Amino acid sequence: MTSEYFQRARAVIPGGVNSPVRAFGSVGGDPVFFASAQGAKVTSEDGRVFTDYVGSWGPMILGHAHPQVIEKVVEVARRGLSFGAPTVLETVLAEEICKLVPSIEQVRMVNSGTEATMSAIRLARGYTQRPLIVKFAGCYHGHSDALLVKAGSGALTLGIPGSAGVPPGAAGDTLTATYNDAEELAAIFATYGERIAAVIVEPITGNMNMILPQRGFLETLRDVCDQHGAVLIFDEVMTGFRVALGGAQAVYQVKPDLTTLGKIVGGGMPVGAFGGRRDIMATIAPQGPVYQAGTLSGNPVGMAAGIETLRLIQVPGFYDALSRTTLRLTEGLERSAAKYGVPLSTNQLGGMFGVFFSDLDDISCYDDVAACNADHFKAFFAAMLAHGQYFAPSSYEAGFVSAAHTEGDIDSTIDAAQKVFAKFT
Ligand code: HOZ
Image (cartoon, rainbow, N blue to C red):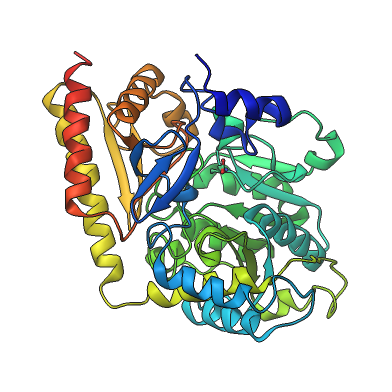
């Protein structure tokens, strides 16, 4: 029976949700309505407590409602919620981002990852004076028209790889390639190279679940863009400050021209950012002719949450501890599945992970993810939820561990998984 919360929501909100994956469409059952959260735990409106592996889809790297972040947010909120005028807080967050991500020489704040990628694409087109962009099948860069082509995340979850409502003209200049296929990309550039403004990629994917780049893939993107004068954009909305302090670009030592950020950069508030080479960023208004704007951009409350979050993740040893916790989880899940003969493989880096019901050792692209056992995922998701474990309600989404997850939390999750896998056979 549909919960009263969902029924009431569906009467006034399309599908009862404000973002499609939340509707539990691909896993069945009712979405859980959250009432509160603290640390690694979330509590539902009907009083159930879950260990959370979604973390608001990434931002809550410190755990929910971290006391120091909340304190800063409250302090700043008391002085005014929005000014639509410059504040020092914006400069402080910008300085911090430029320090932590050296490829970013200048950065502009926006309100979401979608805004960040949409703006970065316009910027790349304005800077190069070229029309085409290249994206990879299964990568998701928000829901702007030009980027909703073979898109991941909710578009994959719900089987809407190209959205209705996107005019052919808006998406016609978007070329798609296969993630981790450097040769295909080289062939695309051989044909269209002089007209390509930018290549946009999630350097580690998080929207067709978590896939790591194969050796040399990101380097090839860099080389091909250099050879043809195209802008390389790393969409680090998910991976920024998540897989490592400097993001995926720090791990793989490949320097993009532009980077898009979101999620952790706002500490749980609606904040996105895009930044990179000073000469490219100089093309944006008011300095240059590429228009981009936003009334709430650089909002003081969001800036305060972001600044405090970025301060707290710089504690020495933070990422080592986070990686250990994540590895404990993924190794435990693999061990539990193996015990009962359930084919399962995992990826993990920093505080991000992917779980695949597949006997492939190396999941490298969208086709590999699409071939995973959807029934196993569905059964796993529902049974884990019943055991108080909240995983992403889609096999195409990555999972997230926070600094607030204890070894005890992880071990309880693994115990639950053992019970669940035992019933698979
Ligand atoms: N697009 C988000 C995950 N990749 C989901 C956002 C949400 O439902 O809140």
